[in-house]
Length: 303
Image 1 (tube, helix red, strand yellow):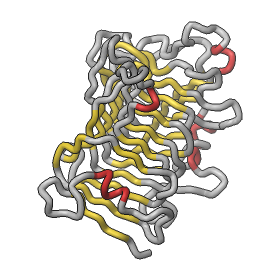
Image 2: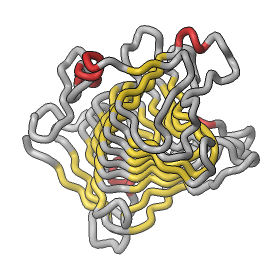
Image 3: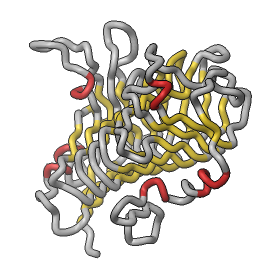
């Protein structure tokens, strides 16, 4: 299929100097996929990929050198407080979106005066993120809806920094806790089979031992699974928190399989260890397949 190529360069040698201008230049319901290549630099702008512009790829030179950054935060005052869901540096509403070799950084910092500050907000189906770094503190990654695949990514934060109701597979990702808190806060709907699946990931942290929980349920049917994941000593022995509501223990769907490292071990009684057959059912991209048979692996023509 023919592709449209657009270059963003801060030195003026590309088609545009701002990322949003390049996205705006793609026609509504494009006739061909658009590949937007972004040169090295710090791009301080809020960026939206609207839902009527599917099949866009944002591709950086490298995640270390190509950085999308902004500093909005929930408690920022205008006429009223900004609120969590209006703080994202990059909001992707479109289906069939890809991002490669880029950093998205909310640099608002952390503290009571800041609260939630989203780096990436995903709100589309069949999205793929490879070699991406997401930097923030509270609420770094908000996965609102749809299916997403994160591969070889780095995600950091402290409180509920991966949260939302989407179905997401994290493969070979590095998840880093900046201080005590909670890695996930899933809000998986009761009718949805899967929320977050972490496979072959690595959990590291800067805080003292047993100061970080694997997750707590933003909504009662939260689904989060860790498979063959290395966990540092910062992970709390209990593993999971009920968000001060014992009722959540009856509905939350929390499980592990093959956890290793000093943070692995016995968990709360209301979390599970998956059986081998259950793990086999999650192999490959089964969690993402859905009604359309989506497979985000390279070279399938389905990505």
